[in-house]
Image 1 (cartoon, rainbow, N blue to C red):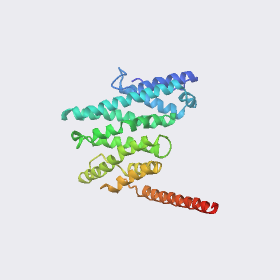
Image 2: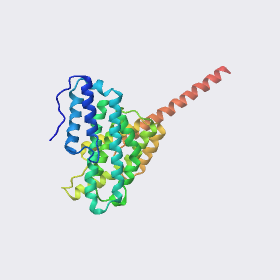
Image 3: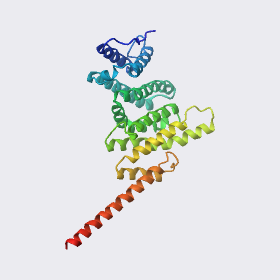
Image 4: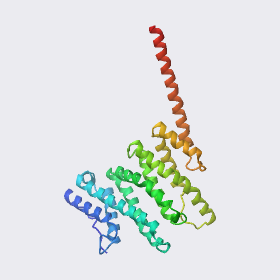
Length: 288
């Protein structure tokens, strides 16, 4: 079985060449690295993780424009494959859905892997921007009638990926314009709110049901959503919080903390406005 050697290259050029080659194999899709396929791909992903964590030359390598370009191309390739496979699910026969799910789960695994390495290369913004851009379509396909009662594992995995994107934005690791943040939030907040009680119900009905949002995942997503909401412009916050209060599922995610902060900020802003108006009026009277 072939593996990429973990012997440290002796100079920066060699390090760069090994890293670029590993990225190309690690982001290959559709069996594009014969004859060893998945074995070489997994080995390449492990090599990249090792180099990013252990090689002292990597900050210089990852700052290289060519290296960044190769990584971005790999990310684009994975996203493209993911979108094609996801869109094809609604066209598959019921018998073919199981194998189709296995294929797309592998692609989602690649996306999760990218989520782990991109922050170390300061490229997580590329991932989150792309994910926000396709989120509306992703959620729309997941809500398709044909997938309504199947592919629970895929649905949970995509919620996990969305959680990583929300965390990156919510905790300031990725800075994006407000409209993109709103787009990300409005795509996934209703879906997560809808799926959580469904998954909980299935777990209650069948203790062996393997697909669920565990406590750690729920807490991390809820915290990230609150942080994203509180960093939005006030009007956007108001829209999202109004939608949350009008929904049937207000227990999760619980946005009461965000609502309280929004109320406090709004009252403080109005008070400052009134005080400012009062000072202007007093100044006018004194000038007269």
